[in-house]
Length: 73
Image 1: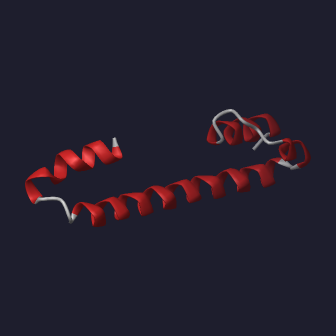
Image 2: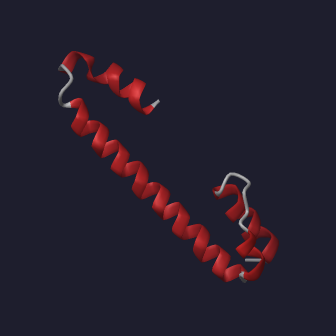
């Protein structure tokens, strides 16, 4: 991956906030960092979903769908 594309992908994952350290990393390192951030975000989303499902077990069954939409958007 070329340096500009790698930095653009990282910037996109970080919502436009490219850290200063990115200037000292090569394209492969930036790609690895971007992939690690994507994996961490996916794991975090799964954990949040699992926690919400566990919490929703305390809500009456008829209200769970609405409560989940409110909690998770």
